[in-house]
Amino acid sequence: MRKEKLFATGSVLLASAALLAACGSSSSKSSSSSKAQKLSWTEAAELTTMDPSKATDRYDADQFNNVMEGLIRLGNNAKPTPGIAKSWKESSDGKTWTFNLRKGAKWANGDEVTAQDFVYSWRRTVNPKTASEYAYLFSGIKNADAIVAGKKAVNTLGIKADGKYKLTVNLDRRIPYFKLLMGFYIFFPQNQKFVEKCGDKYGTAAKYVLSNGPFKMTGWTGTNLSWKLVKNNSYWDKKNVKLDQISMSVQKTQSTSYNLYQSGKLDETNLNAQQSKQLKGSTGWTVRKFASTRYLQYNIAKDKNLANANLRKAISLSINKKALATTVGAANSPAVSFTAAGITDSSTGKDFSSEVQTAATKAVQGFDKAKAKEYYKKALKELGKKQITINLLGDDTDDAKKVTEFIQSALESTLGMKVEVSNVPFKTRLSRVSSLKFDVVATGWTADFSDPISFLDLLSKGNAYNYGKWQSTIYNKNISLSKTTGSTAARWKAMVAADRALIEDQGVTPLYYSNEATLVKTSVKGVVFNGAGAPYNFKEAYIK
Image (cartoon, rainbow, N blue to C red; front, side, top):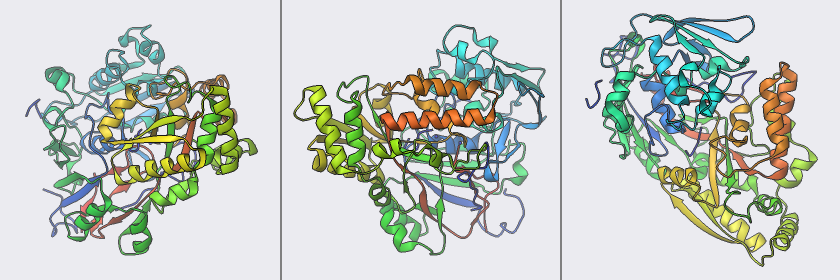
């Protein structure tokens, strides 16, 4: 899941939890009853779409996590809890899952949520006509890969509604993190009648969004930077939803956000590096640990210069990743792997990112100006160039601008490259990258679930997110092995080998692991945060 763009198997350190209508169309009693149950929250970038089949980023995910609900809802520490499914059962071979849906779950327009809504949603997402970038997450569900490739009909997907309240899912292979996937929005239900009535407008504005979760969306036009989530009185568990309203606003400048927080207009704000250092330890200060990596992606398919591995290694070694990490935010740390730190290898008990590190990866992922110049000299000779010019694309947020400015300075001062910087709105950046109109992009990924494959899948052959078209036979072989082996140890070993191969070739250049220092009003209680998947769950949040 794109970060500045968006989720646990094994022991997970990052998945920490903190208690903190037709188309076009009282909180519960507790200690909170004396306070107005209204929350003001922020996002760092604008929404792109509220079509669950087409959304790809963390900010959209936050909304889906609160206005919709899937078979499973992820609670504290990404613990699977009953959602629309009141219970489920896995077969002994792990290839068949049976979900028993609760009766009385409704859409905001009064329609009942049924097993068929899941069948329709999943088929719609894997249908090649939908062009979902997340369709690859269905890999392992029977016939999903063949359907996405256009080789089988969508109705052959391994999902079946046995009446209104029973759903059966058949897999081609055991998926270790399957329950976590069921808590991710791409697997949520969709109301076919509503979707078809909205047509191309589905998910483009609040009036084209139909909720089956704790809240409903209002006031989002598709382009504006503020909207509201209001309590959904049609939600099956409304008695446990305490908030009446969440006012959401996009705050791209942290100084502005902090001022709004100080004046009582926001209940939460992200902090930049300077603010975090000054406010560390103050009331409400906390660090949100995300399963997230910021990195450079190269358009290898378009630019033959960037297809040169020596040039990519020169770029990597020119960047002081530790200094960059702390320049952007005090809670960040330099990346040594593509997979974010904090995910534990269940076969060894070690942090996965530390297993990726070898002398060979350190040699190209570290910071060494002299070696950077050597690699750059080799690249110029191989390419027959005297100087190389690139355009560096990034978002228009404060943090993104710091990243592009830092990298521009590093490459120009160390290598003598010419770096042109383009900072554009998040939505524009996504559009340019997906249409391959970029040289190098400063981007990020937050895991959809806490497993290395959520990162490593992105750069595998044929993946829609592999925009730069980097390819490696060794990498693809190990990704395939991780999905087909029946051995847990062999699976993790293959993923380690894949991440190492990526780093050694600098198919992308990991910059830093992204965490967030924040301030949250002490009156805000019950907010569930998870570092992988959709970050925030407000279902049981309240104001004390």
